[in-house]
Amino acid sequence: MRPSQRNQILDAAIRVTERDGITGLTLESAAEEAGVTKGGLMYHFRTRDELLVAIQKHLTDAWEDHLTAELGKPLAEASPREAAEAYVRVGAHGSASKADLAFMVESATTPELAEVWDDLIGRWAPPPSSTEPRDIDLFLARLAVDGLWLWQATSGIPLPEPVRKAVLDRLLALVEADAG
Image 1 (cartoon, helix red, strand yellow):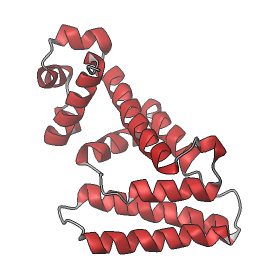
Image 2 (cartoon, rainbow, N blue to C red; image 1 turned 135 degrees about the horizontal axis):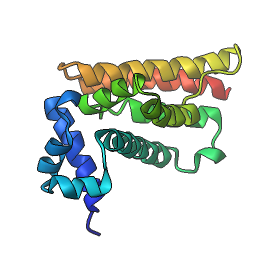
Image 3 (spheres, helix red, strand yellow; image 1 turned 30 degrees about the vertical axis):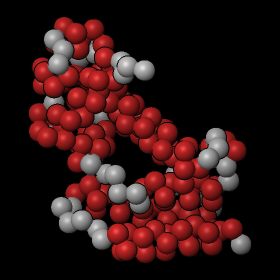
């Protein structure tokens, strides 16, 4: 199946951001990268703000797909421990990009953009509702994998695979401690 022009534009906008930063992302730069006219881009996204919201949704949909695939069932059928394990496995995978980080940072100052990420995180990695050690352990594992993700997105230093695996194993042990 041929990808839609809308998705091609979103992917192009992400590439522009990866290369030139969030300030380099304009309707013109996204259109040029996607190989469409500005009018063709504006058919899908009338403003830069509409494009930014669509990119946030595009990115969170991809995260949701990865999380659901890792979980192996719908989130509604999962225990908090199972959801946390999927979150840790996906977050530790090492697929963080500078564009992902740029869009997350941009969302921190714009409520409409933040809402997209807050919805995803609220479902997959909510803060604990109690101070029970098992709830705190799940939250700590989520915070640690978020930190690992941030390190991977900002550091030019590759994490050796044995170290990444050892970190993942420790985080999973923290998550699995809840199973007992």
